[in-house]
Image (cartoon, rainbow, N blue to C red; front, side, top):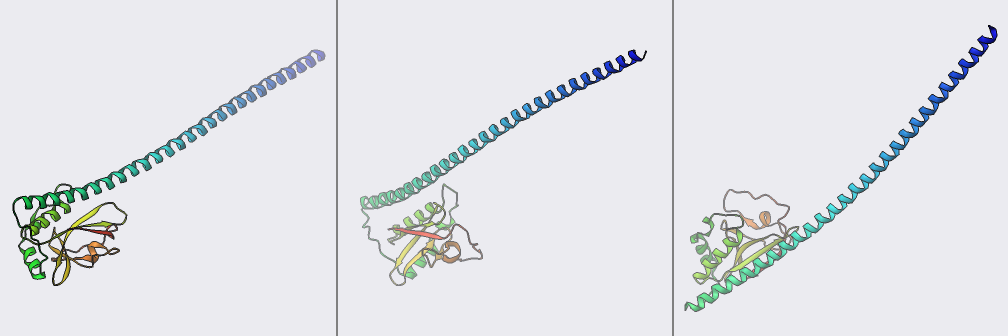
Length: 226
């Protein structure tokens, strides 16, 4: 019996060792499999991150190209506006010559200018963005002045940090020099020079409206067209 017991004990130990070895082997195999899956997942994340960075860089490049094209379009539109203004003025002058008008324009006195501005109704027009805005207001006032023989300049003001311009008119009075008028409101414009803020440094309010300083109203350039 003792011999059988020893055999039973030895067999039990061998069985336990076999079971333990099998468990350790399976557990290690599972760990290796998990490690392989983790590495595969990490590689997928790494490649995905690189692809996202690539897409973001391409998107930034496209945004820069779109911005460049938009800036170029604005510049071309501004140049076309200037050419259109010049063309319209030339057409107006030609029509006056063809109509037999003596076409004798003169620089007004200051009082004559004040009287003209007080009686002119251009400021009563309705402002419509892109249809009847500062350009059309200025052209109308310019035409009205020349129709009664007063020489008038179309004035374009360009601001820093933007391609947008603003149109007003100017008169070279014989007794007080250049006088600028905001045709949308009949307000006088003084200290018109580069570096000044147009709405707060140049406009002389003729009512109760208070102009607030804008970050895009610093004058960069002033162009006059007679």
